[in-house]
Image (cartoon, rainbow over all chains, first blue to last red; front, side):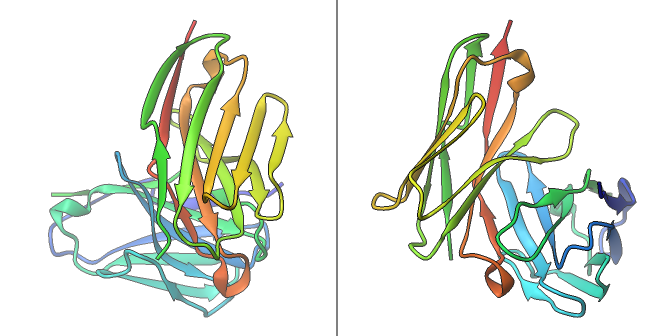
Length: 112
Length: 114
C-alpha cells in the first residue's frame, strides 16, 4: 500500500513570514489536494492539482501559493503568515477519477 | 460554488444505539458523494461513497441513502461501538479530472458511550 507524508508535522512561524508545507505520495495518484481544517469549520479547499505542473484554485486560495513540480509531490506556501492562519493543513491524493481521497496526517501551523 | 451542510454538528449516544447523520448539498451537477471519518489523532479515512445514479449503498453497519430530487443524503450507523467515536464528514464533487474539486461539510462529531 501507499502512503502520504506531510512535512513538517508542526510548523511555528512569525507573523508576516513565508512558510512552506510539503507533501509526498507514493500511490502514483494523479490528483493532489491541500485542505485547511479549522475547528468547527470542516475542511476548506485551498488548491488542487490534477497532474504534474497543474494548479487549480480552491475556495480559500488567497494568501497561498502551491507548486506541483513532480507527480509525487505537492507543496503549499503561506505567503505572509497571519495570526488567524493557525490551523491544520491536510494534504490528500486520489487516482484522478472520482476515486476516494487518501489523506496525510496533517501539518499544524502556529503563528506567533 | 457548492455548499455542503451537515446536521447535527454533534451527537452523543449509548453503545448499541443507531445514529443518523444528515447532509445536503446545493450544486445539482454534483455526482459523487464520499464520506470520511476522522478518529481523534488519526488521519481522515474514507468509509463509504455513493454516486448520483444510486439511491442506496450499504457496507457492514453503514447505510447511505441518496435523494437526488431533494439533494439530500443520510448516513445510518447501526449497533454503534465506542470505536465509532469520530468526526464524520460528508463531501460532494462533480466528478474527476478538472472537476475533481471535493467540497466538505463541517462535520458531525459522534461520541459513543460504553
